[in-house]
Length: 576
Ligand code: ARG
Image 1: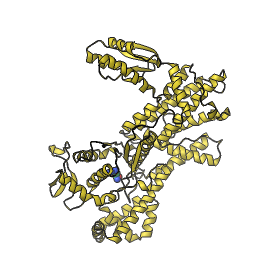
Image 2: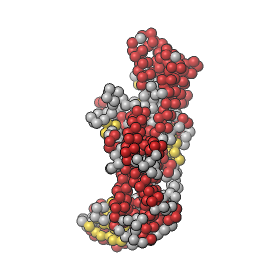
Image 3: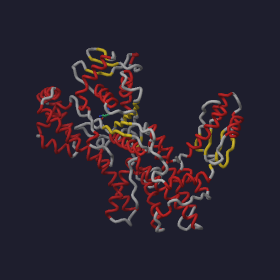
Image 4: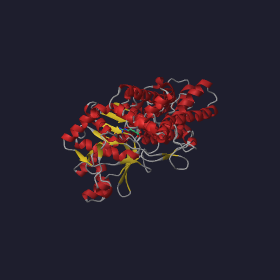
């Protein structure tokens, strides 16, 4: 393990418990006054009713930290200011350098984690919300897999419901071949709108559509075949988007709403049996505990509508049971916009009451904010339509192409094209991931593609620059493996500190689905590297030992940047 803040925490925790006579959190964090500070003496003093500085002194007295900490001081009301020993730091960096996984072991307690993300709707345009879900979900998949967890990807496609009557009739009217062509190239919005128009303006069409829904639900073969075509063509288009985005979702990850059709009645039976399902206004409902609507009336999940139909609630209850019982999920993470929070909180509570969640399985809703346009309103096209996902992707690459041509004229045309792909898609993803997930963010092409600031291009460039040091010096990074790290300049010390924080950041990000922590960390690291690189000559270092030590710092930094980006689903070009 190379997680320095955790090492400090573990060590101090022993001293804290000794003084407290019980477990107490040392509360270690980065500090402006030293490398770290531990603030835990203050709450502990309150608990023990003793002066905090006295507690801090007592802790320092018993703490065994000499090998990690060069200087420990009591400051202010009772903070502990800690300066990390260079010897400890260089040991940690050496450990990272020697290991392919940068000293980050795979977890010894892998959790079967199911991630529900992307979830676009068939024959409907994928919108920016689906982009967020796809990007965040993909990053979480990669991060958890990197840490050694057993990840199950689930794409809960919206592929069932009453609109299919009208969509199928429209498909029949324009001919299946034409429909397939429109859908597979992603004209989903236009297709849907044309069907809608016919439905609203032509009573005969509306009639046919209603009859078609009944046929679909009763399992009419011809209708099912048409429906399947609709689903397949849309899925083909989604597939193309995923590939373009370089996300790991595959056709095999699709388990759409329709895949739970034959489980719905058994789910309802079970909920009736355990006494959770009750009749209300002709519908069959579950009222999970603790959810009240207007005038304190309990809010229902609707299992069966009064017309006998099943909806989104029923499907999600079935999916939850299936995921726990059949797929063996221990942690379930649902990633959609914040608007669906209530729905999922209610489904989870019902799941707990039904005994599906609880012992051995927990579910969490990880919602996200809205993508805003420059006017701080929901991002739309100039014409006021919702933005097509594929257009965003194309534009990102188009803009990156111009920037790369400008910044990297030394690359061949084909290299430039390749780099532009990586930079464009990387910028788009990073702009999303670097913002606190739950907040709205403003979509800003210029900012996300800037080579300055907390952006993908900045980090990708920093990493390419590190590789160029090795190229210029004609040094194979493998040849410095196992070399000693000596930290003398303060910039070296600070860079090493950041390196030894990587592992802990990954764990924290995985726990809370807080990918922006990784982004913020990588940005800090790149900044520390820049300061190091400005003050500490590498290839022209004063002696051979200093040179190899600095090369090790470069190598580890480059690998941390590449690994950090890769768990976010972002590649890093070797040259740019
Ligand atoms: N299809 C839904 C939408 O577009 C998202 C599905 C989310 N997952 C789920 N299990 N309901 O909003």
